[in-house]
Amino acid sequence: MGRVTASRTSHRETEHLRVLIANERKDRLALVAPIVAALGHEVIAREIDVADVGAATARERPDVALVGLGQSSEHALGLVEKIVQEAACPVIALLHAPDPAFVREASKRGVFAYITDADATDWQSSIDIVLRRFAEYQDLEGAFGRRALTERAKGILMERHSIDEARAFEMLREQSRTANRKLVDIATAVVDGHRLLPKVPRAGPE
Image (tube, helix red, strand yellow):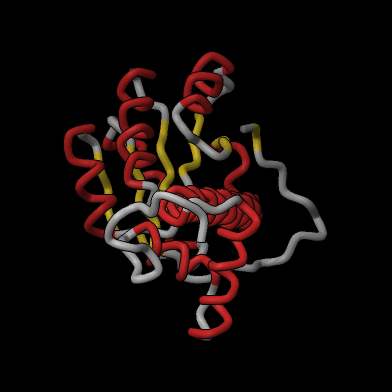
């Protein structure tokens, strides 16, 4: 995770985003909200308390969250952690002044990038970059998840049918073609108890 630097060649890729802003200082929230609105976005939640921000994130489902560093870095880190736990949107740390220690700790908690008050004119380009990174991260995470699911389904088939890995994968592919469904959907069905599985494990190979 690092500071997002806007490029002169970057173009506006996101319009009218739903933005959650969080900071323990009300005066900072009051400063950030007009800047977000001026970019054409909607501030859908303003949170101060760590106890409330997770529920607000789950309820409002923002496109992006801006978490400002107020008087307490622990408070800001708590806000970041609660939002990231919902895995609903990328979180950007908003700093008033450089703070390497906070940036380091925030990155451990899942912040995607940080921007500063001095870069307010470049916020939109920075947000665009972060949203692209977040989408790429989700795609990668989804690919790993699909692969893990397929491996799990193969393992189940190998155990239940007493077959090797190649044959288990072929069973998944055959069912995928026959049912005209994605391989990952068949793997999900196997893991959830698909009809390919016999009721009792077989003693020997097919």
